Structures are given as structure tokens and as C-alpha cells.
Length: 72
Image (tube, rainbow, N blue to C red):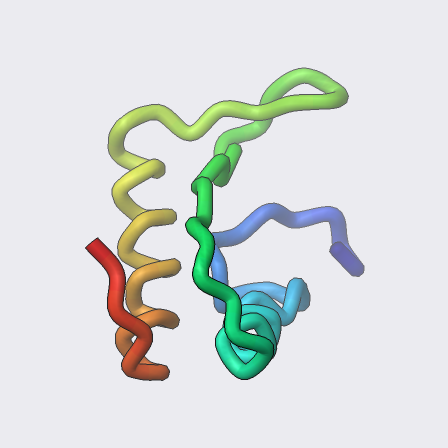
């Protein structure tokens, strides 16, 4: 968020991959909910739409794949 740019998981400074790996190491067995809001929106919200939601999904599942974390 240094430059206030919103990007897919793994492409910014949010340390998403490190967080996911830490959760796995701690025994996390829950679920993740994607709310990417990759397109600009109101002051307190955003929007992705179907195309950008696919981008966000692929970015997040790529992190899971890189760390051999199963999902369905």
C-alpha cells in the first residue's frame, strides 16, 4: 500500500504468500474468501467484475500451488 495501488495477491507488498505459509505452519484448517476489489471503487470499497476476479483467483491459487497447499 506504499503507493495505494491495488494488485493481485503476490504482486504487492501485502506479504500474502508469507501469511498463507505461516497459517499453514500454525495448522490452519479453515478457508479463504476472495474479495479482491481490483478495480477502483468508492472510498471504502471496490469492484472486480468477472474478468478481474479470475485474475485474482489465479494469482491466489498460484501462491497455493507454489507452496503445495491443496484447495478445491
